[in-house]
Amino acid sequence: MSPHEQCPHKGHRVVIDPAFKADAPARYARLREHGPIHPAEFHLGLKGWVIVGYDLAREALTHPALLKDATPAAAALADAGYVLHKPSVGLGAQMLEADPPEHTRLRRLAAAAFTPRRTTDLAPRIEQIAHDLIDALPVSGETDLVETFNTPLPAQVIAELLGIPHEHHRDFSLWSGQALQVASAEHRTALTSLHGLLADLVADKRRRPQDDLLSALVALRDHDDGRLSEEELVGTAMMLVVAGHESTVHLLGNAVLALLRRPEQLRLLRERPGLMPGAVEEFLRHDTSVERSTSRYAARDITLGGVPIPRGSMVVVALGSAGHDAPQADGDLPDDLDVTRPGARHLAFGHGIHHCLGAPLARLEATIALRTLLSRVPELELAVPPDQLDWIGSGIIRGVLRLPVRYRVASA
Image: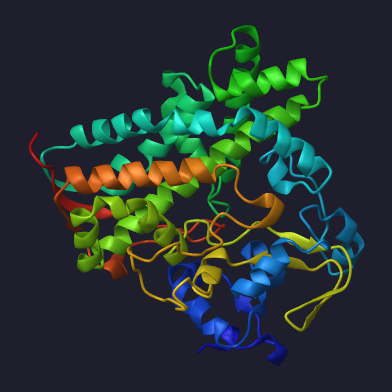
């Protein structure tokens, strides 16, 4: 074990850098052996605490003194050398970074437009998109599955859900993918471009409303006493795009990679496709695409897992690690993948008031996409050794940048 991975009371700090992220499951497993919470250093040298244990993660995600808004902790952060400022362009004013009562208002309004029926009605379209992407492949050969299947499927689904015109789909997919890559040169440009596109579309939907989610959000803004400001409207759309696209891209990628590395699990799903909804829960538990929560800040001195957390401290929950520490229905504390596991317990979609609003859509997309891929592509294998895959090096998303595979599509 490296010095950075020892337990917190010895004063060593976990450095969550590209090397850590590439080997995250093993690194988090070693951390859990030494306790549920550790001091950590994140992107740009930001320091705080990372929670790796399931029970403490649930406590932290609902702790009343751990806020998304850092303002109550500003004085303590300033004393530690951090200067708070509002970025010129980000995800905008939206519920992901809000606390009650603003969070309650924003989530209620978004939920009124993002209804369960709107999600379930997408099922036939998701299946058609999956078939179309497979039909576009040559009958056999090699392909990067991230580029040809995992990325375009959720991008097209969220674009059609929001009502983004087809001519903008390519740029939309590119920008939404770059928006969460915080260490990349394209990050800020992508956020700016995506914000501009959605702001323009909001104006267009106001003039010509259609049967889509963005028009429904505009109607809430315009007809409900202005309870959704213009910036909140665009910010909510940004949040749905970024959270709903990139996380699903890598949920698919991590699931396929896990299956390709475990042929017996792949064979089970091919033979018993009815297992797929439960298998998706296991994929979410085993190697979730949202590796860590967004930051929370201690509004006062608190104690977590027996560790004093001073006011102003940043706290992050390792959602992926918590899944490997979660007690399961059969009493097992699982490490490896089991697609037959009943009711896999995890925190992939968070917990408490910030539980992911789009979780039903992510589950639906993954179930349909993976079932279609496995039925239509009977021969599928990695085209490179697993240790040659490149992983996303920064941010909260976990996934491979490319997934080269050899494949054969079944004849019609």
